[in-house]
Image (tube, rainbow, N blue to C red):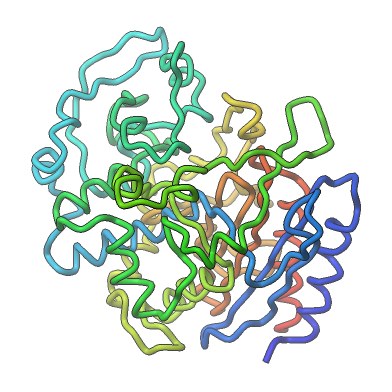
Length: 412
């Protein structure tokens, strides 16, 4: 049974945004679950597209972009539990990915220097490997031109041809590390990343609508993609940001789709939060009883990997490609500026948050303005999903905070 107080508060909040044409937000879905996997609230609001009259529903499918990173990391940790991968064995990564042996580091002046440190799987999963993203890093963006880089092309070559932007294991910078981690997993196991995720995460959890290759049923429910162009406040429908996996149909086409651990999945939010529910329960699904990770593995994922960088998320993120992201002074502002942490693939708000979340809550996002959180202390997890560019839309961010707050208030 949903919590009616939470359901009503969230519905009213979301409708206030999707019902206001000036926001440019056609529709959103918000869903939160408790430790038993029960929905605290499940709220669709608005329409699938600005020009599309179909209402947003709990069956609507979203490209979840970087929310994929958690799934790819769970896959790597499962392979680690099976003895197929090691977090700290640089030789294993070198052997599986010989391309990394020739990767150099891009300096501020646009020249390349030799890499001083070998890369481990842990560095790839924690964004300490030295890789960046072309839409956040102007130096990398410029280096890629005149051709440019585009990680939203479902093509492995875009990832393989990028240089590092930092010396490995020196500073946290968000980038393609988890795409590389997925490549490491595929080469160590001989299994494509999406196949691994389906066999070892989705099937045990009985989830049918989280996939890097959306099924025909998922494609029918796809939300429209929207864009607010730089300098304009109004939004418009746009071509999809991540088309190739949607249009691939033949075996030949599917074989050439890069299984991107960084951004490759499409999902229904109500299914994604069931993965979070398993993490709330130390790796065991409260609904199917399947143990997808050992409890000590989940604990390890929640350990702060970069205690020496307590302000890593306050360094600011540039809008190297303004059509894809706005500039951020910091990732998750908190009163008093408490130390911030990074687990295996997600940020940790180590102190309780203004919304009511507990200590050491994990959260992350997808570039088309989707956000999830997983609060193991209070046994609550949830997701807000939209499909609008650029990242950092204040209407969606505001609703994430408001709806998360409404959930905690209703539970009190």
